[in-house]
Image (cartoon, rainbow, N blue to C red; front, top):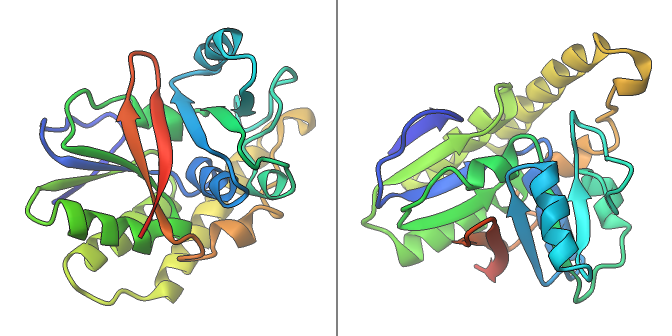
Length: 226
């Protein structure tokens, strides 16, 4: 087992779980709850735009600097996603950290995306399919929430009973760190996370793992009930 930061090296053949609690993979989990069929995760906004040019039926969601680009259909907000009509729709998601993190690993034994919403289901999927395979938990952000989620998931995988309260406290600490950083920006560039935070803290709301399949220019993410 290892818990690593975004740019650390990863050995081939490990189960890689890419964690982004605020907000990419919370948003993705909500999209699947709303009936999205799959999500094509890209490494940048421009890569997302290029993919949509080839697949104009897909909705384009994500952020640049935390904010929804004007030409995107949806932002990187779980609250916004919870109000969208997504049944049967296919999405493209492009974010600064989470989706980019998924594309860093050319030879994983398995590739998953996780947030607090599906952390328990992620642990169950790994235990069922790769119980004897080494795993790496990648924290895509530098704030407290992803590390708290990684530690919680690691405890689950080791058969322990971690505290949900500790996980939620870590997410709230991370949100406060984000808020302090956003407060230093000009008003138009600030991001308000207050509406999204309750969803980011909703531990084990989603009863599915988000399993990725590497493609040439994106990772195809799909929900697998667990």
